[in-house]
Length: 92
Image 1 (cartoon, one colour):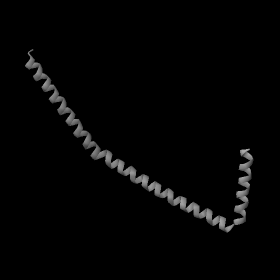
Image 2 (image 1 turned 90 degrees about the horizontal axis):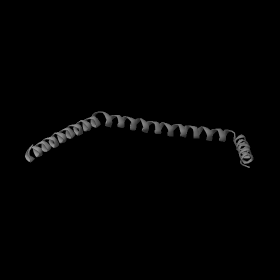
Image 3 (image 1 turned 180 degrees about the vertical axis):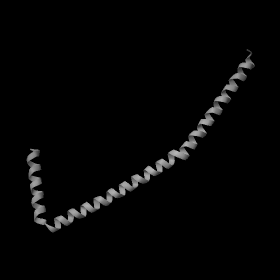
Image 4 (image 1 turned 90 degrees about the vertical axis):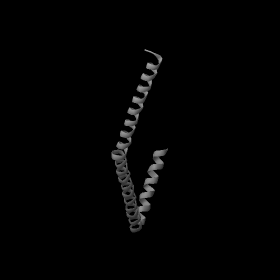
């Protein structure tokens, strides 16, 4: 094998490897575009919806707690005092 034959073989192999890399790159880009990105967008949308639902639940529970305290303020103060007393005794 002469130097030029080796060089030609190396060049041909490098060209073939580069073509395979380009093909894989194109396939990966197509996969990302067709499957991954829509799936990520769907998951992000669901996460946003879950966060919004959690905020709504928090607001409703906070409103319910406020209404309960306003309806029975003495009971709320007594319950808070008992909880504070127990927490103080446990922390000693």
